[in-house]
Length: 188
Image 1 (cartoon, rainbow, N blue to C red):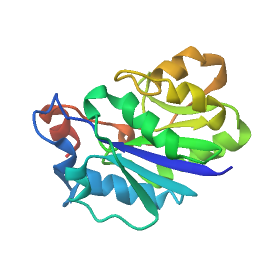
Image 2: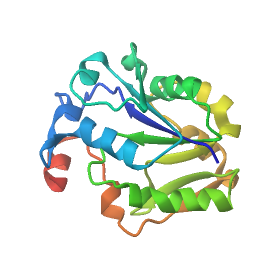
Image 3: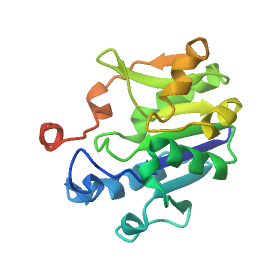
């Protein structure tokens, strides 16, 4: 397996009314924490899809390839397409930057599952609902490149339920994301 980890961090934070990825969690901005997580995964290839403003706010190791999404208003699918276009891996792991509790050790079981099911989409389920990150084999590259709107890879996973494997994490609270100040206060 050649793993490409793609951090999607170009969203507009519309529901927050402020740039949530520049908010602090345990002394770091959310985007910096997410970049640190990206590096902790030790993927063969690491890609950050973000805005120019956010890129200026972080310390980025040379091992991470930054790509600016100049059209974030297109929704998450635009960032997925940009990251997919630049990827060369046999498996693409898509992460978001609004899960500040997530650790590399939470993702490792997904990678082990993928070794047993190399042609399957692997995704975590918490409280009975699918969440991120999501691991796609490169056979879904065409589907990822054809995405539109703000759905991200969810549409592909939903269209290929027979080619998907759920992962039930030991620490489901680590997979909590947030979109509002109320959500953020619950995890902070």
